[in-house]
Structure formats: structure tokens, C-alpha cells
Image 1 (cartoon, rainbow, N blue to C red):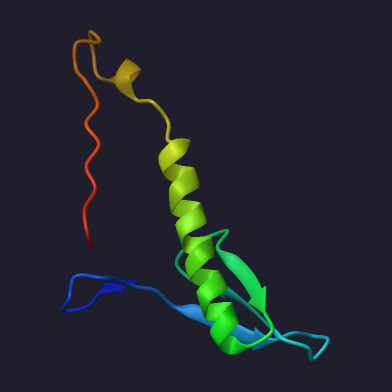
Image 2 (cartoon, one colour):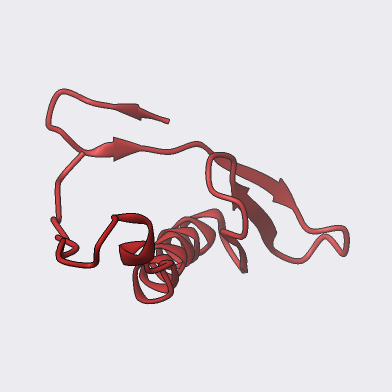
Length: 84
């Protein structure tokens, strides 16, 4: 995983021909659980992008609450969205 000059995240998509010989399967090396399939390599790449978004959305919506670790409970969590 690396950042390019434009500040976007670069990920490694591992692409293989399906064992049936019909279509392609793949996964994102840096993100466990981000995997998909497609009839063409181009479709697979788009599906993998969707899988990355789905993993990020899931993690954002199901992140652990850590306020009990912050002491007396007066501290508030802050969520920031950044482009990497």
C-alpha cells in the first residue's frame, strides 16, 4: 500500500483466471476480506474497488467505541475523514 503524488491510496489487486476458465477472481493484497470476481479483468477491477469501499464502510460503521478507555468519560471521540 502506498500513496501516489496525487494523495490517493494505491492498492495491489491480485488477479487470476477462474479455475473454471470462465472469468476472473481476485483480492486486494493489503485489505483482508476485499475479494471479488468478474467476467472480464476490467469488471473484476471495478468489483474489487467496490469490495474495498464495502470493507471501509463496514469498518467505519462497526468501529469499536473506545470512550471507556479515555478516563473519566468527559472526552469525546472525534471522527475525521482524510484523503491518503
